[in-house]
Image (cartoon, rainbow, N blue to C red; front, side, top):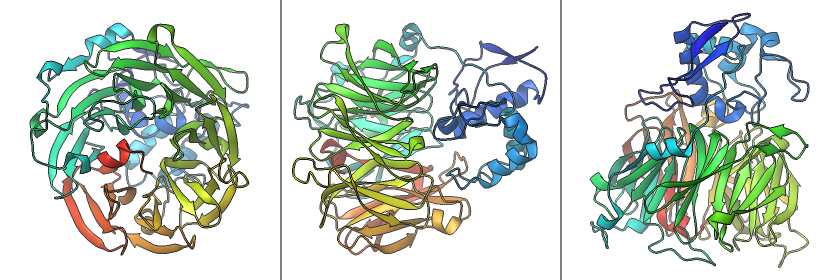
Length: 550
């Protein structure tokens, strides 16, 4: 048996899904790597592969990557695929929605990864509440928070922009287009959340405090009223690998979900002290026990004192009532695997989430705490934060892009006013390629989609604009022609007059390598550019996120 130290350092940051003091035995038979190469391949896998395929490689959005055959997962095993075939798949991607990685990894790295996934996956360690408390840091004490903004900017039209590779969030003034700050956060922040307007609870100064979740499980608290050098006010690590966070309606609690360990953690929002850990392991909708049950999307419910928590591998939505943390009520709602990301309808009652590997959109009624509907859609739906609008024939509708096919699927979402259209497909639009995000604004005549999951550069670098009235693509906008760059994610400004889009280099870089291109939402013409950004991806407008504008 060969001893392999289980550690991970990414871009000079300790973002491990395991700790350097933990080691794992790996059988020497079959493909092997040196300790250094194994550690390097493990780091690459964490950065780019674990999100879709899982830490234990059992598959979810992506295929099962266990070395041996797995009949239940319809997997022949990576050993049988062999080195050359695996290298080809990683290099060129697949038609099923996996990106090409020839512009991200070197040939040597592709070779290392191909060997690595033919070896047994090491099991990373757990994380205790005690360890989380040790990794809790306060930069500004709550007693020292300002009682009014310490600047004269219109902070309610700020954009918070993920700078993926640098482990930062940029704050940009939506009025002046100036970069206000680059804030240190966890590695590769996946999402940011703030307090939102709720029909049940009201927090003080909604939109002032923001909470980021990094891929390394680090929660960071940001105060937009501070001067730029003091906007990062506290942080705590609650997992080794994570994706989402949400804030309670009254602003008292934060919930952070872990991919590994599989759990969610409730945190005091004022101090960022972790309070309670709840395991997400359990029995899935097929009656099988799942050890790696990852926590995906988490959202506060506007009409109840609860969070909706997506259990990816279980195929369940957990409605977690935070009104009594000592006697935590959790309603487990069966639906479909593998739940990923979603959004509310305009009433805030119905949560619509993609079970992407099941090719379904799942609808949960947060009032009855039961499954409302499941809508069959095309390959790997992925709405991101979603889009709601009014269709001239179907009435209120929602839409999603797909990771596995170039298509937008639109369905009715108003069971009260348009019962005949509710949770049924209204129409579909074929786009030039698979995408990740769809966004709109109530004042806009259009909705916008990216095509980031497309291997062809000219498509991957383009955004498509679709008319709400005619249901047709009215314009395809190529944002860049630089090799290795992609167009991703759209966000409107507060009044809906502008659309902000991201251009980023898919290859990791610690140098400014991307920009935001801003378009007039009506004429679709370019208005401005914000440069000097590090791999800008998701963008979050304060006003829109506080007011559930989708």
